[in-house]
Image (cartoon, rainbow, N blue to C red):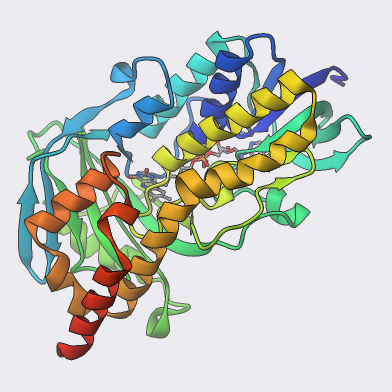
Length: 383
Ligand SMILES: Cc1cc2nc3c(=O)[nH]c(=O)nc-3n(C[C@H](O)[C@H](O)[C@H](O)COP(=O)(O)OP(=O)(O)OC[C@H]3O[C@@H](n4cnc5c(N)ncnc54)[C@H](O)[C@@H]3O)c2cc1C
């Protein structure tokens, strides 16, 4: 039994958890922090691995060695038409490398890490601390951060998880020594309520498909079939089943309380995945950074009530913008065939890439006037 009291216990060592741990230590080097994960690291995580270079704003160390490939060519495909843009740089990572690198950085600041340890429950102990219960072990913490990802069960069991929108996704890692063309593809011709992707890596491709399960498709498993048709386009004739992974993604839905007593939610479990693109790494790292700032204030002032302010920090810096993306995604899902031809232009891709690279925001790019205009035009055009 480990009975020592930690300032902060973080459950989950994905990008949100490690960003939070690292940034608390940067701000409060004396803080006693425990990071726990049920996996053994390095661990695989189903993911396209597309990362916005904006993450460098929230981590003050070089990320170069964790980046697998830098991509400058983005191709958007809709109704058989390809539109290409090469004005922005995107980072491609392998999650087993990237996440492990962030973890090592957090550990190097003095964060204690326990792997292979699943947290089973969290209960209020007394006025000053909360108990984190794992198999054969328990720990006390003044602040508990849940960074358990979209599949996490703790926040849901405690009744404090936001109600997110669930997207079904499937990813295939194709390893190859061939010189592949190095372009990033987003393709709307393979799914009625989402898109297929091909993200280039230094030694292969990460191919996938994601979408909301709706209408006639409810209850049917259609993604593997659609993905197998899509991968064939890139010369991948057969799946190696070991490299095929299905995974739900929790998309942002609406503003929600993210602090409950001493517990704070960050990353995907806080609902910070972009509802339009399913981008989750940058907002996860950013939410960890925002939570770290509030937690360090809590530690300095020894005042837990300051933690509550994180919900508003999240809303102002992440949620508000994702809310605008949510409106756009609602109309896109409803009128996909009518809206797509209007937004598959080089100007639209560049606008979108401005948002992805952190140079702009959805609120700047998608005004309500623009959404109304798109909808009116889509209603007038034949479906
Ligand atoms: C198929 C697919 C493709 C994607 N592609 C992209 C992409 O290209 N770009 C992008 O930005 N985002 C992408 N995403 C989304 C992105 O992967 C996630 O949003 C992101 O990983 C969330 O980070 P996180 O830190 O919140 O959680 P995670 O990275 O999921 O980490 C959570 C950690 O918590 C641990 N854990 C969970 N429960 C417990 C417990 N009870 N006890 C101890 N440990 C626990 C887990 O082992 C895990 O290591 C994709 C997602 C999917 C499914």
